Image (cartoon, rainbow, N blue to C red):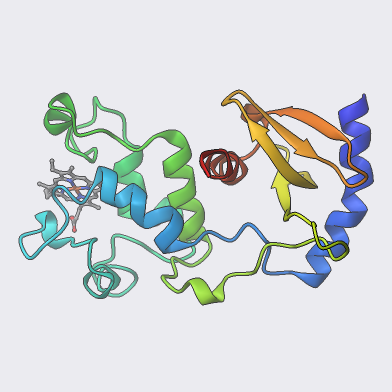
Length: 203
Ligand code: HEC
């Protein structure tokens, strides 16, 4: 199994990277990764002074009042107890789902699984607004032409260090250390790595 061998050989590099960047190159950024999802799927009813359920997501200051505290919709570090993620993950058939099922019928779309996973990961990471608490992506040291080396994580939680080449929406092509290209099924990457591939493909 070629890919397995590649993943194994990259584990050492991943371990070194982890020692150098324990905060992980994959940390989720609120403004870049989460706010756009909320803006797209939730702001319609949860922005401005008349936000539904007294839950205002478009102002960090207001949103922060519902993160932790007495009446939280987000419990930092605990996505399972976070009403926001729970409601966003309920099926259309459940009357407590967000957006509310009647609104969904009229085109207010639910979060996709990948979006919900990102939100859950952001909550699990502590639901922070501040991007400066995030790690920088690991970059290859040598060569003026050096491209960014990203850490990719598959659904088995194995890490792989590689440059991004392209993605066709089904597979992602990565350039391994040593210049070898591999094609990897997007579906086998975890939600964060899938989102990263999509983001890079769109650039
Ligand atoms: C079409 C309007 C609409 C959209 C879109 C919408 N909501 Fe809501 N939301 C409401 C209404 C109305 C309430 C208050 C009644 C209730 O709790 O069911 C509410 C309440 C909530 C609450 C509970 C607040 C509390 O303190 O009880 C949460 C959490 C929530 N929404 C999350 C979301 C998320 C996450 C999204 C985006 C995926 C979203 N909503 C999109 C209308 C909407």
